[in-house]
Image 1: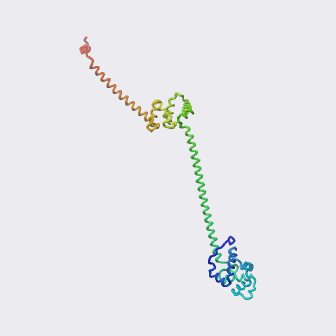
Image 2: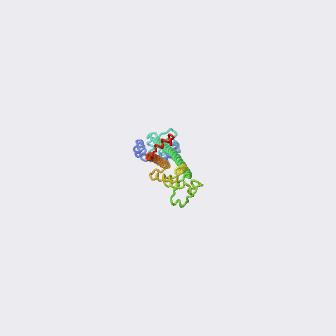
Image 3: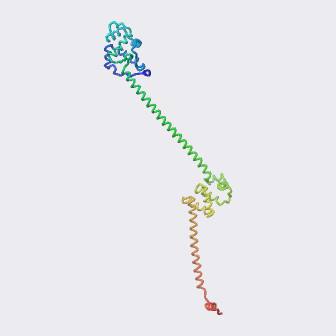
Length: 315
């Protein structure tokens, strides 16, 4: 657990800690150095603990670089006997650890291991913080993955929509193969003859086809000719004649209402106007004939004697 630790927190006012002050008072300022060497040793251990055994104390004595007089000082302050003044560095380190446990309360022990409660607490807090950070990063990555998947889904839908749109456009172009959207300008007429153009409407059409000019003018003045419009134009030509239909197309274009419906209305209106004129003319002629007959009768001289004899059989 402690092997992933590469640093630990060191309070800037650690030297003012009452427990540290007691340690320095009992063992001298050199104990401050020993203390941080010990913390470094504990920080890299599993569970931040060291065993209470001879090997540990020997290693710590060497790490502390204890000398004879320093050993005497730590031993005396720990109420050790005078014979311990000449003890080995192992004993010196052991005495220092016991002093930190019993006198300074900087360390704790269960008889088998010893540790620094402050170091354990701080590293556990740091560990929990790292776990929380890792969890948040994992969650952020998961959400990011969901967003990425959602974005990929949207992108896929957009691509599919574009493909569908392109397909519809292609179908539209195919349908336009049945719509006669051709412009009869000079450049186009240079490319195709009248026979070629008329063949678009009827493969058996001839130059004398009465619909040719109607189709041509309609497409120039109105626009595209669908199969339905083509059929209607043919009916109008059959009913009214080529010239009348052309005039109706021109009139509808002039008033800005160019459509097959308006063209039909123009032609129907013309029929009504002509019918009205014919009725008026007939009435005038009838009245004239009646007056003429009356006048002629007035001008005739009746031979009443002859009439009488004719009626009564006398000569």
